[in-house]
Length: 477
Image 1 (cartoon, rainbow, N blue to C red):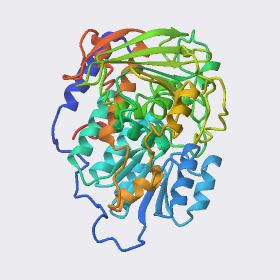
Image 2: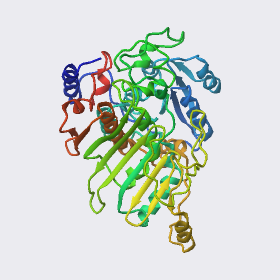
Image 3: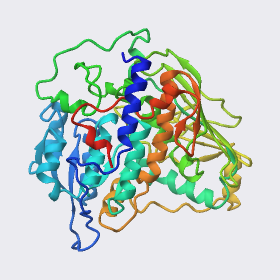
Image 4: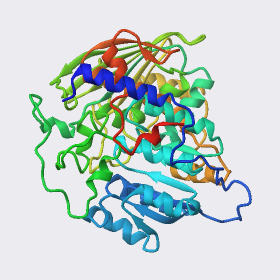
């Protein structure tokens, strides 16, 4: 492992490198290829799919369903593996690549938009390259693994305003989004002072030993796989199935745990419409099975947000781990699930407590699940009474799902609902939570300077270890 002393030195150097503006490098910002003007009626968006297995397979099918995309390229570091063949068959005319850099070099001028469905850590270089090429970006959540990578994506998108961006928290185009917006504007959701968000299902790392003292032993890599490209900018690790096939989410070096996986589906609308921004304090209240390599068996993390104008200070507490539940208010009932897609073979039924949130305001308590699932006022009798008395505003129907919204925005017909300027800050909140998890500590965060002010090691983790040689240019604007 890297010692704290050496980490502070290398992370400090990385922070200096990230501050450099407009160096001479291989990636040049070009004029946007925005098709908003001059597009013929019915003309589709030329799309590249990057990451086509597992979740990438699901996204490819959703993109195809829209009828708005022409898939011209597909890219996967393990192209030809069993989990990629279905998408390869769906788009037989699309050019195939294992390395996204070669794809951009050869086809950048022919690609209008990319869908990025790769592991968390690899989102950043792909999205950054696309933005600098003037290519629209739909990127799965979380956008990036470190706080500063998200800051760079936010700034890059800001500097290239014609590039359309969207993070893949699909519920942000569903009923919960429009309901939260309508209820906030009508004053139903106001004066929120407490949010309890929870994801209490088993995770991949729950079968691992928290007494670990090293990374998994090396194994032969799959025959088709480009393991070097898979790791992209991260520190090199020997191949192991426990780092591949979705297991990357277990490890601090590659993933963001349950918080990064589900936070953007659970408290995304609260974060946006309550204008929470960044917290001033983040602290671990519980870390069961804590270790230096992978995420705890159970975590309770408290994010403290200050008063924002007329909005009161608010504490958002995150609970993950089997049986690690928040306090359940009287009259809660069951946790119904609506519009929550089946994820990785798991289906969610009405139960005592599904992944979701409990929102406390001065006037009401709300409960909700994740993704597109609507909020309900508790107890149930109170909501029924308010409906009968016409006290709840009408919630407009979504004009487009998340994929359609992005593609229509590429056409100049809509604006995306989860652009990087919004979703990037949400991801930074989760980045701070992961730092607290990793160090099992509490720290103060300066919302103005963007620094952790009372823990140098935690502050260095905002940037992390410098990228591997050959990937430095992705970290400059």
